[in-house]
Length: 170
Image (cartoon, rainbow, N blue to C red; front, top):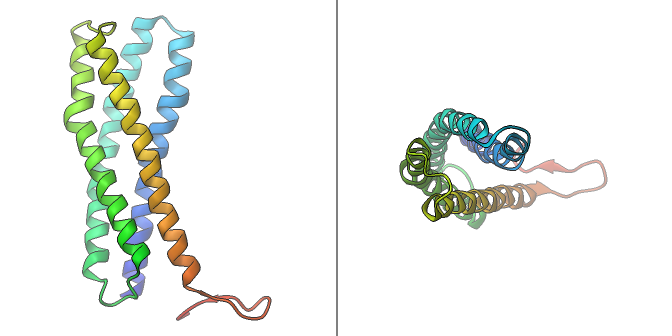
C-alpha cells in the first residue's frame, strides 16, 4: 500500500509540474517573445492556438491529480497520515478548482473575445489580467503542495550517524 500511495503522490507532483510549469513557461516566455517579435495578429492567433492545445494537457492533469489525491485519501489509514498530507490535499484541491475555473470560464471567454476581434477592450484586458492572476495562484499552490510534501519527507527521514540517514520503514 505504501508503494501505491507513493506512486499516487509521484503522479500528483509530475502532473502539477507539467501543468503549472508549462503555463508559466508559455506565459512568461513564449507569449512575451511572440508578441515582441511578431505582428500582434499573428502572435495572438498563435498563442490562442497554443493555449487551447495546452488546455487539453491541463484537463488531463486535473483528472490525474484528483484521481491520485482520491487514491491517497483512500489509503490514508494504511500510511502514516500527517498534517502536511492534509495541507498537500488542500493545495491539490484548490489547484484543481483554479484549473477548472480557467478551463470552463476564463480561457473560453478570452478565446471568444479574440475571435470577435475584441482584444483591445477593457473587457479583454480584464480577462487577460484574471488569467495572469490565476497563473500566479497556480504557482503559489504548487509551491504549497511541493513544500508540504518536502516537509513530510523530511519528517520521514531518521537521522543517525553521518552516512546512515535512511527513510523510516525502508
